[in-house]
Length: 369
Ligand code: M6R
Image (tube, rainbow, N blue to C red; front, side):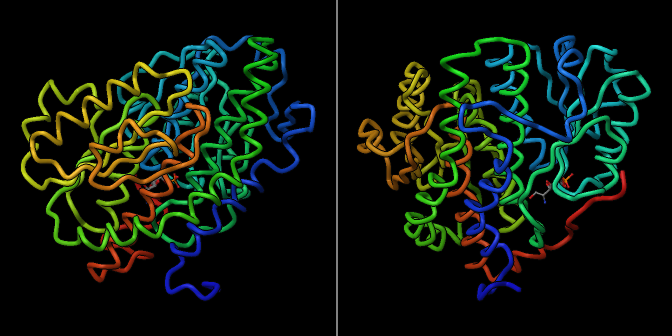
């Protein structure tokens, strides 16, 4: 059932275009209208929401961080994201107008479950984004949006992460439609672009071979840093998490703007630094700032591994390795930018002889607090 692959993870990475397509299936009409059947939250309830709080752990938390950028931009509803294990211990402010979104692949993470129970006790409505039908978290939520990634066997979340992103975007776009905000041009354009993501992910997969070679050449590195800005920051965090859990290597992500506030002191000769460059569309200021960051770290000896959209020649002179991804709208970029990072971590772990399906000390679902 590994479909000819040595590891489930390799198969699951390749399945991503299909997983993304299945998660969109039946939810996006040709005219751009969204239908989210199991959401079970009536339009009038969605119109009353004054705040959104996203709770999740690990990779699902990273999906939540990305969702915040999209939801706040499209819906103009304040959105907080919190690691589920921290949430209920700080006396968070919740009420009936707060929509809590619990993101969990397995639907069984105890930290997320306890946080959602707490939110329901405070009268908040809870929407689950989950991959496992009938699991505990969706059963205990008011509504659910299932990701249709299919079973994920590898402990590292890959295809379920991409589908969580799709689900988060769908929720954000649906809320924008229901609330009549920005309905029209921007929302419709994004929905059209979202529908095209399966082909874009497919394109990325066809061009990742150089990433494998690069990963193998870094098997002896002691640490890898990841930099990003805007939605590229959580993508960088996800790249670092994958490397830790699969390659047992120290990895850390920074918001690129924070470099000068401390982390730049870490840069030394030969240190591999992966930089996720924002798309140029709509965010050119950030794009230019990150290009200066790349110059700064390279001048201090960093080995720069740059992920940028195709045709972005401004980064070429400062990239030791340039990984090109398709040009897509900024908010959707995480769907394509994450894939090379998954391949990178997986290949590096394999080069070290690690079992990528079953990394040491980890379980697929964490059912203790
Ligand atoms: O099943 P969940 O999405 O609730 O799991 C959350 C985390 O345990 C999970 O994402 C974990 O971080 C993955 N192994 C990351 O690859």
